[in-house]
Image (cartoon, rainbow, N blue to C red):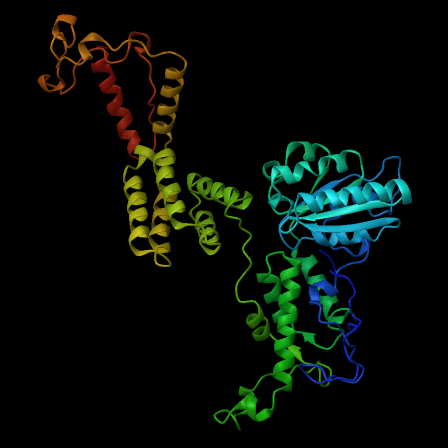
Length: 494
């Protein structure tokens, strides 16, 4: 996003009576009249140079600058797909590009548009190009919501450059956009805005005539609170700033008797709302309390059906595997706060207990299963407690993937055809006629042996001597390894 996020919509609307009183606090002398558009819309940038962040996409000669008409080279403008989390400037970039000369800008939303709408745009774009020499820029928001048939309708116009497509998506285009459209477009990845980028946005929005026009002041604690909780989302930061400014205005204009109430009237000066000494006379100050009222919970970037779902759970499991209990707790909290199904988390813990810990600590699986049962019984939010207990157990347990590796190797051999006949003495001998076939003949029961282990062949002939399970020298598997060496020696007659 940018230091001035959205289009200048300062002028009052056509139905606005300049002499009519407006809602909210009385105007100070010289206060500008702004439209009712949200602050995030009023502060939208007009040029690429106003954009804060995404500098990796704005170098001289970049596709975005060519599309915006700022740089001209041998290559014409290319269709692009903008991929990034919310509030990072996808819509903003599209509107800046639309300001280029000899451009017709058409905006569609994949939520409401259909194939008929797309074809209509294509037909008009072809006419504009051939008869008027005008390029149509089609901005398609939420392209991942388009079906395959709807995306197919875009192909002729993109391939023949009837339109320059600027598509935006928050989901991985590799999974949500058809391959032919991807191959005809440039994929540009937007990064979350840095803290300094958001700070610049807030500071500019406070003083910019298109923004709050210096009619409020933003205190340092309030500024830090907004930066802490906006999650790199410029739109959320500006929306929260506007709400906090409204709270500050409302508090300033409230009648003294309403503000204090009968129980606080006459209270000591120290108990009343603080005034900033450096604030201009009559200018409300946005305090941390105002900011907390506007934004009381951090934005969590998480899509339960998209990349964030898979990326966060991958980091969660790898943190447990890597024995970083603190990181694992962070990702657990992140999933829970984003509304992830706790049963899904419990299932992943059960898998991790066997895949990454195994018999190095057999009680880990018991803990994971118990946590899953507990979540089913008590639900949320209390279910977070047994989940956290299971995470702590698994992350601090000794690790072994020996059982996981053993079954994978055994399956690989079976799929490769290494599955010979079962040795006759191990075959089922309970049905009539089995004895005549030699089934069960010469079988030795381990219970009849003094050591409790019988020396005989168990695997098919071609797998004799194959070791699948190889215990690690950690946790209980250290002891299992010593036992396994003795057992294999007896069974194999060594």
